Image (cartoon, rainbow, N blue to C red; front, side, top):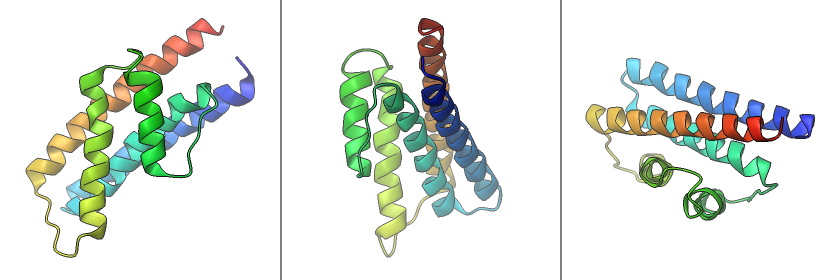
Length: 135
């Protein structure tokens, strides 16, 4: 595996983990809308981590989600149930970022946090498998 590609994947996953930690910080301060935004970006950056290995990119968030579904979920390389967190996080982020009177509860945010944590864990597992294959 090219070292530049490996470094890009590592950086993207670090960005995902940082966004996840930002979400926890915001949740502790009862900022659930902000936390949902950061949880979505954690899953988004994680998906981009895996797309990098295939040289895939999209200028649109929906494009990244679609490419991820096609390349990793439909091919069986990523757990289908865990992968749903990316779409759910995208929908919730759209709602809280753009709907004027959107409300998100602590319970919904906690559930999303658990789903995104599972998504990040699965991404790390798949990434490590890729790294091992290309050693």
